[in-house]
Each structure stands twice: as C-alpha cells, then as structure tokens.
Length: 101
Image (cartoon, rainbow, N blue to C red; front, side):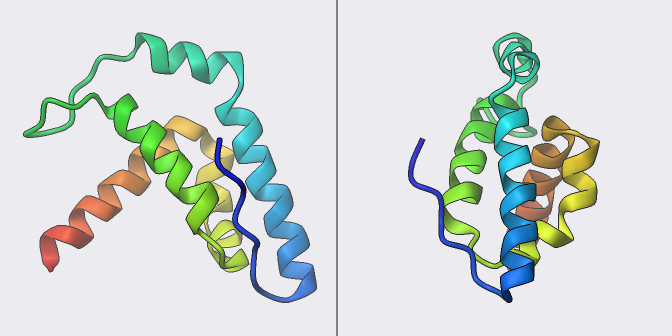
C-alpha cells in the first residue's frame, strides 16, 4: 500500500477524518473483504473488468489522493454501511460524473 495522503482541514476535522479513514482501511484489509474480493466475479457494465479489480484501484486512489478531511467525514455514512457498498457507489458516481463531461 502506498503512503497515506496527509489530510487537510481543521485540527478537529483531521482527527475525525483520520479515524474514519483508518476504519475504512481496516475493513478493507479484513479477512471478510479479502474473501469477497477473491470470490466476486461480477463484471462492470460494458467492460471486461471485474468490479473487484476496480475496487482495488479505487481504494489505493482514495487513501493516497483524497486529502480533504471533509471528504472522509461526508462519506462516513457510506463507509459505515460497508467497504463493498461504498466502493461500488463511489465507482458509480465517478462513472456518472465522467459520462456528463
């Protein structure tokens, strides 16, 4: 895993977001999620890539590039639901955003 991005925001936001991000990383690294990645074979729409392949890339991008503490705070509800749900929803939002360009 690459080095974590230094978060930006108020000291309180940074502390809160650091905790949220670490919980996300811990859940991502859990045996349950590793099993999910190993056993899920669903393909992305109009693609030969598995969703799980994209999740791995997106995870690395999120933890190394998302530097605004408010991003992690704003996404807390999704992260609480589950890593797979969050990554799936985040990927769909990025796809939709790129389609609108």
